[in-house]
Image (cartoon, rainbow, N blue to C red; front, top):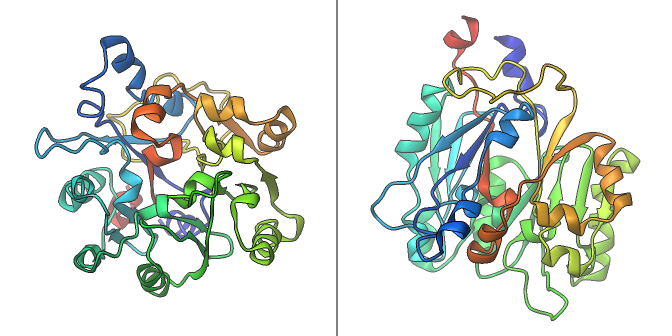
Length: 326
């Protein structure tokens, strides 16, 4: 029990569970059958790679067209905190289902100690759309925030203070000088690899300091992607840990994960589109420490506007002590 509890405080690599949302029915209702079949995110690839996955099903009502992207409305933390976020679109505000998600995680042995609800900021038209709007460097405990209509400075500072993180707030634009709407479009920060479209950071000095800090003095590889690569979702990837015994998910088998899976290596989850966008040398850097899982989710990217990272909400909650001792 003590070892498991301590492990949960390790940055990113000790994610015990990945929460993937399978709520695409509303999203693809207007698509033909072939496109709909392509759009459904199949979690078997992650499970086969040794990543433990639990699926939270959508509810028929109210209609939530973007519910396939759960990372925007909640995050979980190693102290047992679940944070709920203010969303800009009314249709996305309806996605918040704290009772459902905490009950689901409790059934897998995870404890929720407190819920921090930031949705009251919506009344002031101030928003912070979860790990879409910000990206966390869990090694350095930094909250990277690209300012947009979906990320308000005041809310970002309030979150950073609550979680004990240092906010780094900047403006970002694409090649056409259009503001970047979510930080996780332009950057991803893992334990051994960071991906960033540095050219999108408007302030040159801040750009240089962010790239320098991401490198951890040479202990983390930094992959600089171009505007074009960013447009193909290369920045929208996430490092996930493998779970050898998939605790408390016996009803969610690993779907044939091979005995040869190397659980000491993490998984870099991205879309097939993103993988094609990376240069061979960049793929080689990622594969030094991570195995890539890259399903084809082209319809989700085309219709929903998000990619692989947006479909995953990590779970850092502590395991129930009694169940952990069993």
